[in-house]
Length: 296
Image (cartoon, rainbow, N blue to C red):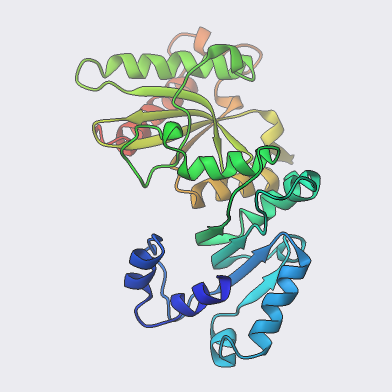
């Protein structure tokens, strides 16, 4: 299957054939004549088999070079990205062992975050014990997890809000201002608020606001002090946090980040009237929400 998909992607009619034969829409940003391609398999034996098939000429050598085709396990793809990733799970309903090997968070995170533009996930029946993989698959395909049930291009997530699962007082503080924003848009717009939304298999978004009318959605990320490093007198996002944001953005999310130091300094800045740094931050968030949700 992976070899067939590579040949289809690199053929002249890939846009049409992939969409109609395999149910996969190619993003318009992908140039099928020049894109890079990677094939990831959890199982080493499948990687070796695919490499053998390539060596035997199942994919012409010129195509392999032009598209910088790489085949490997998640460990081998650490630090590597491709325009298109074909992720082969190599798992079926008969498997009853190996959940730790398949579901290791680091391996799964690497495997599911190497695509710059498109990831094609190949799988068959997944045993119920492989819950993390099922959670990842459900993020894309399970109907009752879709934010509105209509927007096939939106990240899929449970549209629920529960203040008891907020991770911090900071999140609860931000929630009150997001709720004020939502209330201010009524009755013209019935916006929906979710929190702790699972995305990309392991990543969680602090808040998601969804506009059912325009079918737009945006995430609001509450960035605590652990997301930053200090260099001299300047605060900068850590590399780990930047990588996490890049993964979520590639997954299709529009994200508004709000840092802790614009909310707290020896006390909540919201408690101080007409404080410019706080007022500017709230106005910025509300303006970006208007733009992202098509309310401006």
